[in-house]
Length: 363
Image (tube, rainbow, N blue to C red):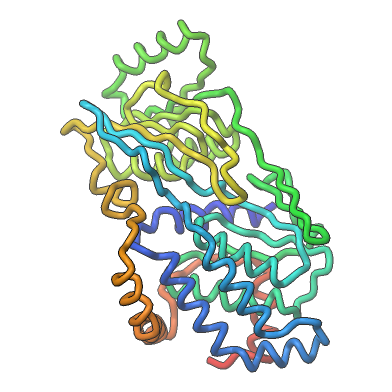
């Protein structure tokens, strides 16, 4: 399935973007674009004779918007004598959702943006002219305005979705939700990016063998290592490197319950891999020494970007200026008519984009 490659790349682009409050900015902009296109939605509703209203669409968006955002929030991030450690809710990866209901589509799109998963909607009743595809265009073009890949969100015919290639399958039927998530394997992976750690790696291998812990050594490119880890879903993965940027990419993207930098896999833990439909828990560990210090690359893991409970007056002030902030966001984003993001977009999206854009959306 060619789309999986596009989804994997989209996941990488979004999760390596460390812009503060990025998902909130994107969703605030999407809300404005939905409201701006109220008339177009009503035309489509009338044309399709759909038993739904524009208010139903807005309510679905707002309902999902208000749900708690757990992305990389932690209450036990700590600094030891020689290390930093903590566990965090992180995105599952590529999620496929089987539904023909546009309100479900909206809710999962919003949830996907907040959690930084990719969301693919699988439809047994797929039509190019549909409310779901109209919603898709607004969401996807908004993502591109913030230099997030358009392939982060997709809608495909059911027969084009190879479910076994996704990290999670969500089936919705008559309001009932059934979730199937790939489990982590008992395997562990050691990725050697720098052989300067050769003596420590040998000691680590001896320790793991003594404990009868299954592991595999990889010394290829970072991209190959991450692809291997994604396919294997090991319970533990560690990288040996002196490159902070590479370590950050590895610890952010590696699909494992325990992801370490220059640290022993004996420190791994059994974590709950089914927090909810959007997240699993990942433990990270990396050294605090001078040789490799990831502080500047882990802004989202530190107190600076943790969820802070504000007092009532601060909240009231925030609500008061929200409308002005949204206007500012819209002005800033739309001042640039074209996004700087250049990418290959899946062919299904290309077809529906041209058809719906000509009929409805104004520039």
